[in-house]
Amino acid sequence: MLKNTIRTIPDYPKAGIQFRDITTLLGNAESFRAAVGQLAAPYAGIGIGKVAGIEARGFILGGAVAHQLQAGFVPIRKKGKLPHDTVRIGYSLEYGTDEMEIHRDAVASGEKVILIDDLIATGGTATAALALLRSLGAEVIAACFVIDLPDLQGAKKIRDLGVPVLTLITFDGH
Ligand code: AMP
Image (cartoon, rainbow, N blue to C red):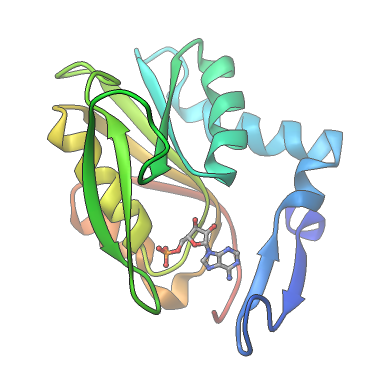
């Protein structure tokens, strides 16, 4: 069972957070392959042009999903990491704010894209990534995550923005 391959670290990076560590899922050949297969399967054969992954764990999953779908891969990165012309957006974290970027020429207007990250919590990160993709004219077909923390209502937030959400596993609480 996929859920059993995820390791939970209590009070990391700070007290009260149950950190859902996917390195154990990634390190297990069967669970890595199963997760990538389940994230990709609904989108096979429908003309997905790009898979966009959110730094850093979204790169690992997104690259493999892109390969599976015979699509390109697009990195959405923390500010200052991408070398060419970018579009940038600010977003809120639990404490403070951060900024992320995408290359301006990474996606064509009207191109079908799926967005990938390891986990959706409050949905702040995915909402910002979605706004970047839409600012380039992408048609975002779905946002896909291995883990959902439904108590934090992030997936609902993305669905309310008109994008279907796929998640494979849920954990109660934060
Ligand atoms: P959010 O913007 O609140 O949806 O947070 C999602 C981002 O923070 C993802 O990139 C996750 O990797 C990371 N994250 C948030 N909460 C956790 C958690 N409990 N365990 C592991 N990663 C988390």
